[in-house]
Length: 292
Image (cartoon, rainbow, N blue to C red; front, side, top):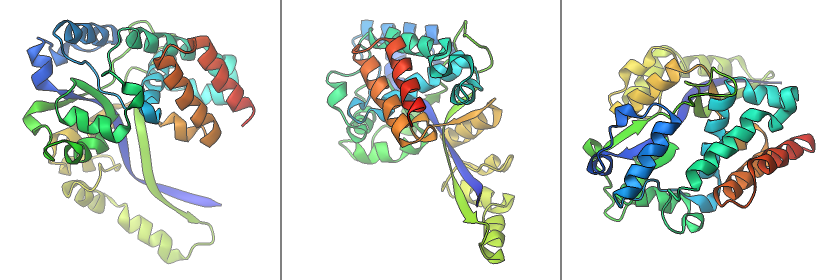
């Protein structure tokens, strides 16, 4: 038997180039709903600005869209209920609506040309080079995207902002408006571990050390209240998002296991290209879950 303790969470957010959104006349604080976001995408396109940079070749960056929309449409219990086979499983209306809303976005052609041939690393650098207004990616990209930029410096902090994934105005099941999507990293020991191992984890993960890890920007603390040590404003905002969230969902391509996760990524990529319908995507994921 394994016992685990979390050390830090991560959140997927819309990294934003504020110089480009301001150039297009977009008020980021006014983006509260998915409709608001789609309207901003159109505004950017009308201004001749690439709305979103995406690393479609790796597929997993695209699954963030479908996953977040499923959380927004189905509420924080959507995935757990689907895994239990309740309410139609992954063919529940919330997952189908997630696919429909994702395709509403992709039909606007919001991504850079050739996005399906672009890796995550390349997309990260492209965003840091100022080639698009938004990049849906984890908080972990703060430093790597700079290193991947042409200059090696990327966008300055004053030209960066993050926004939460927008809410759905009329969801299938309410309650997912503030759910966050991301990761949880931590430690695990077996029930045969030496007492010193347990003592080490308790020491490593106490509030004082969590606060110190945040102060050194090693991670975003998971202990409630320890986020006050974060000096980086983006990390502090992420800590606030997670602290205020109704539920923190682990990346679906990991949470559902390797085989089902791969199907989620494949379906998300196919949805982005218009190769399958939202119903087909949901059915493929349900089939993968049934035969896992």
